[in-house]
Length: 101
Image (tube, rainbow, N blue to C red; front, side):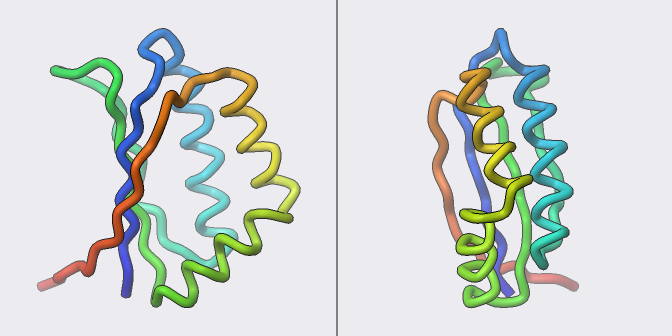
């Protein structure tokens, strides 16, 4: 199992757009075989940092998701939405191995 941790630097004036972007990807990760654990928007503290976590059964499944996302019309539209709104300034991706009880 592999968990992807995304740390976003977002435009604090575009949090609503980023939230819409996140809602789209929660659906899309599930559609393409993953389990999304949510987007975490700024609250107290930094106003321009957000996070997301999602899990795939294996790194190979994640890589398949990445390939499928490149040609999936809904994924392409979600990417465009982020570009058009400029809600994301940059992001970092980490791969984690979860430990469950």
